[in-house]
Length: 589
Ligand code: ADP
Ligand code: MG
Image 1 (cartoon, rainbow, N blue to C red):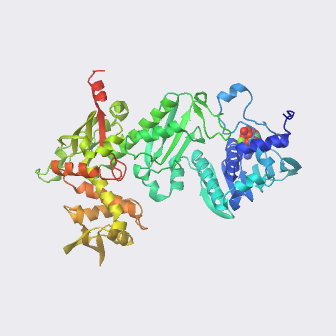
Image 2 (tube, rainbow, N blue to C red; image 1 turned 135 degrees about the horizontal axis):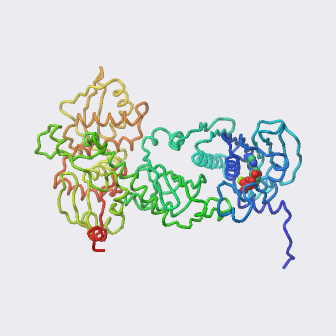
Image 3 (spheres, rainbow, N blue to C red; image 1 turned 120 degrees about the vertical axis):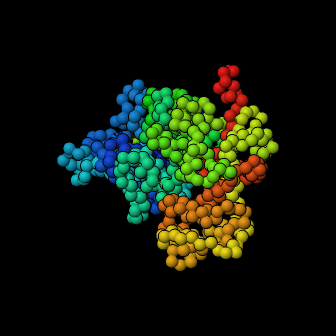
């Protein structure tokens, strides 16, 4: 065996770079973290050719004096850690003192930095880890770091880089992540000379997220109100189950301002949907977690992407309940205005039972039927969480379909009560109908859809903006079996309807869909077909009158759907209360 020797400094840095600097996006990540740690209010990121030719990060942070700037390029040099006890209490994004020397050892590197109080700044040039030049420089307070020709001296690494566009998309992902982690900082991103992102500093995470998401998805965000656990708190946003995807790219988790990936958190998110997600799909979610620093070890991964929680199950459960609660609140809000009344005295929103069929159809009478919402959707959901419905996702039931349930009956012409093999199931026939209609409409572009022409076309009076919104989507409406035409003078003509809908009031139906179209804030542009299908399905579900026969039919049909456990917008179609849970409620355990 050859003799053991200590690696020369530069070689050691290159070895460390192997872990820390995988591709341009990792450089951008490390440098943004340094800027954030330096208290920057504004960060400019520029790249050329996917970051392989140039990466430049400019910040207005605290800057460094000459000696510190030189020291920052040495291995294990950091201003963020002094004693080993600090390791249990890390509040900065960096602490390993490895990034700068690693990056500088595999590139042509230039650093210009100035402390606010200093008269002048310092410029250092490094090539492949060797300091080439140090001089005084005039510059604005803050730090600029420029990396040219990444991996120029490590051809093996360079070969592994993907197309410039792929590398650039990794860079952008990293920037978006950090921009979400630090909304109060302004971020600008330029790629090959053109501006890609310009994110003003905002005080609310919500606003940063909206900037990044685009109007359409932003309109669907479901807020996860702050949830307090033992030594941590969590808050954030979700998109409905219909946005769930196979991968977890749409999940962003920030722990004390650090983007992380963690499987327990991901599971907690899925569990929060209580069976409303198809197996293998993951919801789009953004979570900000604040945790006492001593409850988590961030020093387990060279790129600090993974962490170790001391009480991971508590966090997972906390996230799961926070998500479930958010979805329940959203569900309550989804009950249309006509079925909600707001009690002025208590400010409490209550959902109402739809009118029984035989009842006179005066809205005042309907108000008299105002009933409290089921207790687990009341304002005190948090206290009531033990009775939160349990996931209905086990496979055997899905394959048995409706046969897995014994029909008991309707509850207030609104929900159905079923018996499952281990408890009580509540079924929402309206949500089921919505799912069934949605999936049929989704198939329309490929398979076509039977459309029923009206003998006498129906006319609806609209304002010009509404007519315009409809006409922009005319093709998509036609695909869905709904032929609409501009009759002139602000009148819209309904010529045919999807045959399978059997609408009780087509005019009201179309009117409501148009209202939704406008309320969705997308009036100015054409809506994606699946979004339009969702609107149509929702309104079709709401028009249905629920009877024993129709509800039973939909329960059967529901299990022919691809995603039987949620409506088009992710609301559950079925929720289960297990016998064990009921036993506990009645004091048997
Ligand atoms: P770490 O961030 O783990 O401390 P780095 O190698 O990334 O290690 O940076 C080394 C040190 O250089 C930091 O601790 C910090 O003091 C200083 N530094 C790096 N980047 C900046 C910056 N943009 N502004 C001010 N100081 C910086
Ligand atoms: Mg660092």
